[in-house]
Image 1: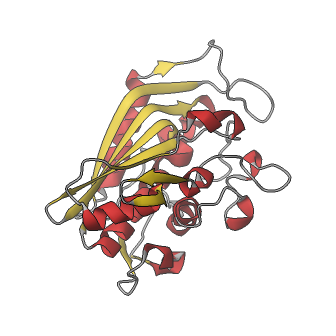
Image 2: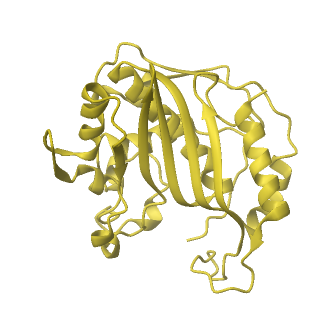
Image 3: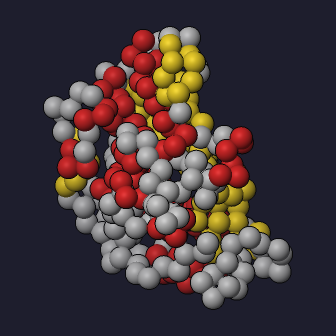
Length: 276
């Protein structure tokens, strides 16, 4: 059975059984009707996924892996902050009339900095270091740029990646300040697992571990029944997910280079309310 399912169930049970309820506190997020969106939360959740064993997609319900990867490439490859460059609709509520989400996500990835090896953006610096200085402990990105926060329509949730080469494997830590567990947990896990796979392929490594660190992992009050039903479901074997082996340049990847096989899963949960 899928190890990702077991990790997800364990995390959700821990939040529900041992989490802190924000009901009655002053919270920023609101539901569509304007009412406060309270949560049950746990601080400092850490989940580990060994990509050499299986791809960590939930089978309790289907994760739209290719749509998640389209968003990942929008940020890391296109380095865009405009929803017109994105196939999905998940960012529509944060975009202005031009389609921009402000100086967030892809905008930060496109900014160039002076590194020892020359001027380049954070993505190109990661690729250069993985190819040229793989034993460095400084291979990382960070898009939580304090000087631009007031011009971001949403401050980055998944804000930092740290890469580490151990032997012939590429490992990574994804740091996230906040996560809506029902709406986004496996979405983020899948897309950053694919990122590790892509970078490993083009830089000459095998995929290793993805460690997901979540500062505030929360279940919204209106999501509790859905979570309880979801974690009671049957688990299936993890799907087989691989990349087109012909791609040798990170900037050549497209979503069709992601090959997904034997993805058996439970019924999708529809019309999940999203707090804004």
